[in-house]
Length: 116
Image 1 (spheres, rainbow, N blue to C red):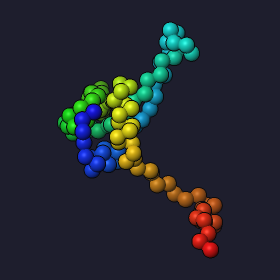
Image 2 (image 1 turned 120 degrees about the vertical axis):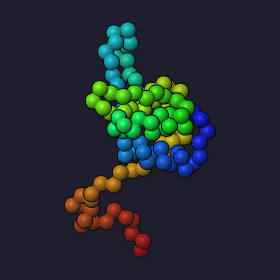
Image 3 (image 1 turned 180 degrees about the vertical axis):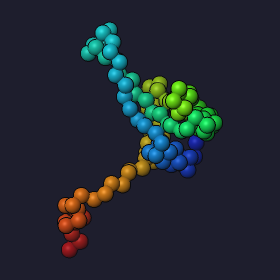
């Protein structure tokens, strides 16, 4: 992976949070000990007419590949082990946490430690 700035890392982490996915694909393969091949991926998605943006992101990172699916969705996919490890170390430290609505319990009782 190419050297990029912390601002670029933060932007990419946010983009992954909003329009990306981290997933593992299991493929049946009897030659493996447990009968499955495990393949992790990091994928970014955009409408097909924005594939140039994903190509630019690929150029910045220097890893992975892009493709246009039959349903018109463009993907930028990082799937090789070395690149995934580097991406995790460099980019995921800037990851965003999605905000979720508080549960009813949170409205009645604070989770914050007492300052007294």
